Length: 374
Image 1 (cartoon, rainbow, N blue to C red):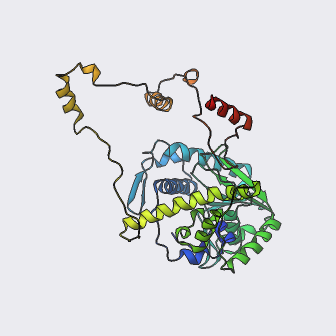
Image 2: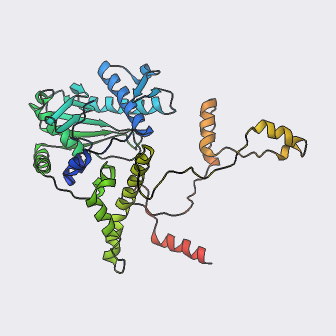
């Protein structure tokens, strides 16, 4: 797979901090985590099914390999379920727009060697007036296609790349779609036109010509964030903000999540480089707190059985609701647990305003405080 310096996945960062590309070029690559590998495998299954006119169940047992990692499709609990949901949503969308032509995983370039990427699926309606740019995502955090920078870059690139430019001949309606089976509704779309894309092009061209560094929330997944002096100064400045006035507290609140994520990313990078043998002054890797366990459970049980009743040696608890649901499904038992389960929050916590959970009323919180103070 070809990776360009500026692609769809970096588009938001490239728009807000054009200098990030130069900062990132010497950063050693991070190994893909389990979630990323899982997503890549499901992308591959979607690609094969769409290209070869197959269904996900046909590919059970397919071996996915990535950098020494191997996984058999269908071995995970939700492998088939998630891809089937995504594939059906994609099929329904193509039928809704009477799609007559599509290209799977075209690699398109806006500026050769610099900007572009691979589109999961680009499709054209039967009358040639609507183009769909579809991106499959298998994470749990909902992603919106509305004014998506990633889709915008793919649209610009597909207009000028020889692989896809002919699709745009009669287009006047542009559809950005995110196919995400782990979220409510699965397929979300946003329709726009050439006017929006032209405005986006002006912004993007300006960013491509700049080397400005500007820290913000877009730094969250930037490989250079733990090394970036501009980001570090920004985070340090946050500590100087007071909380004597509402405005000052709001300024700190606006930075809180961003600083949290930066710290997490910096620690992850620090740990990774230490494991690679890089010496970082003031830090080292140690074993986690040791926990005691039996060397041989059967052996100790036999030995203790002569000292006390056997039933005192063991404890037994009922499975939790999620564990019980999984067991019932495995046993193919038709039993409704609804009336036996209650969902109770353990308390309140702080969250960003765009978190999907409903906000707790201030009066409720005050009531909790009164109870605590009794």
